[in-house]
Image 1: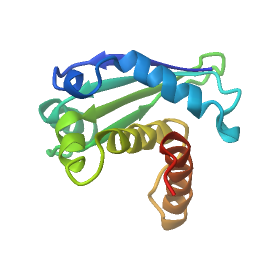
Image 2: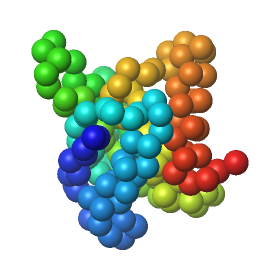
Image 3: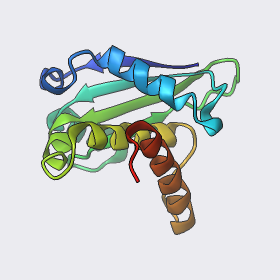
Length: 148
């Protein structure tokens, strides 16, 4: 079972996602039906915030003084008994801006899935890693949204 803790730090999120806990419960239920995610016992947190907070987090943790769409903070616990895998932060303004050309929920799902994959060990520093991560993201999105 995959569990998420939602921290709502920006009221604008409520304009799009009325009940974030319920939204994620449905998405994680679908995620757990995908073979590579079955039988995962994991917990993570998502901070739904805005550009100001994202810029601050990006500066503090990555030394980059700019906004970004998503940040992932994997929790590397030596003791394997802990199922907590880390934290994700997402900017409302960036997702909302992208959704002008797409769909808010597709853009949101792309973003948190990207962060989640970082938490479980995926990255995109090299082209081969990028392709592997992108393939996994697309698999999940197709399952969520029935995208061709």
